[in-house]
Length: 295
Image 1 (tube, rainbow, N blue to C red):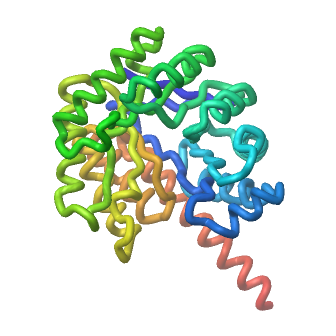
Image 2 (image 1 turned 30 degrees about the vertical axis):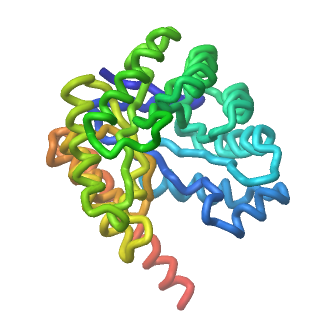
């Protein structure tokens, strides 16, 4: 089962037999004070820089979030989406908890977007799923409900099952739902990652759907975060994870692409070798530029 997302002219398929889908997390003002202030002032230059840098680093899609207190989020999200679409041609994950912002974003999106996100809460299901269905989008379903984030993998499976059932009631096929099995920080709970991995395996085995999570959450508050994220991702991919909203730091991207090769999702290492040659060419060009500048 593949979940197919589209930009103006590019298609990305997320599935168990497909290369892992990297969704760049950077275009988000959370924890980025200077970026948030730029956005408040209508300066979208960093959006362009971040979009291009993440795609060049290996992102297949981009997550776009405009969540800033006391701003007109629908209008800002629309502007950010239009800016990203003009800068790069990759599918986009439209990220907001505000219904009006999601609706506004979907109206200006060119292609089939991924909506981030809905939960198993009855109210959220009834608010968001009709919107997703109306726009023909796909949606990330967070495996939590009114009681909060489940502590057990089994409860997360139950939440996932409820989301899929509700989506079907609204005419959204299972391929249009990516379940988020919830990655929590291991710094606050030493069992957090093992619980997430159990949830991924359960959802894969019981439901057979595609999955996506915020991979960087596992390392929050800890030093050497890229190394931790890069270690977590191959574990999650082997368990059945098919996409992640994640950092495009080189160590993280390489760990994902190495997993693709080793798990048989990159036949004959075509993508791995092509990326290696591209890095070599880039390094050579940089050396030539430096030598020319010094001459």
